[in-house]
Amino acid sequence: MWMRLAAALLLTGAAGCGGTKEDKSVNDSTTVAQFALASSDIEDRQPIAAVYTCDGSNQSPQLSWDEPPPGTKSLALIVDDPDAPSGTFHHWGAYDIPGAVRSIPRGQTIGTQATNDAGKRGYMGPCPPQGHGPHHYHFKLYALDVDKLGLPEGAKIPDVEQAAKQHQVGMAELVATYERK
Image 1 (cartoon, rainbow, N blue to C red):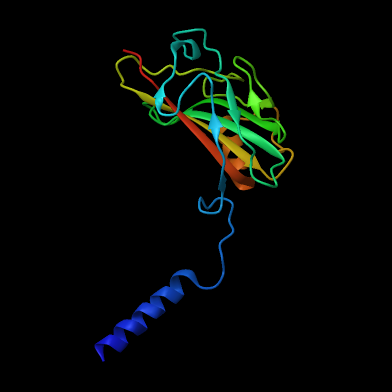
Image 2: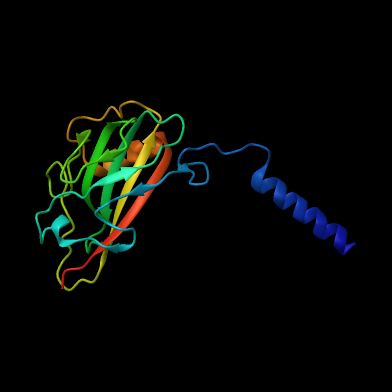
């Protein structure tokens, strides 16, 4: 009797958890295709060179990526620091990057530049407080199913990321660290 009851409960629980309908939400990380983001200037999970920070010339590193998922019409780039003392600091955002583009040269921009948390458009390199320990800089590239996000010129980076997540078909990420001692 207990075996039948346990089996019935297990089947009831399984039916309620998944059903037959698949969740095709693009915001569900299990349905978003991954592709690779790389750089000749930074290595994943390694310290970023000072030249790409406020302690150097503050130029953007070179970025390149492999073929994004099928259906990609444009790309959006977000660079942020979730370790910032007052919450995530958004360093760089670019959107409406043509889907055929496969790289951004060192020190260059592409697409429409978003407004970073310092109130400026374009790249702002890592600049954590001295003695605050290593910060992680997430370079996130979203593959999108639209040609344009329809955002106003100079939109703020969080608005770009929110819009990108609604249209993402894929995502690539590279993480670099930086510490000011």
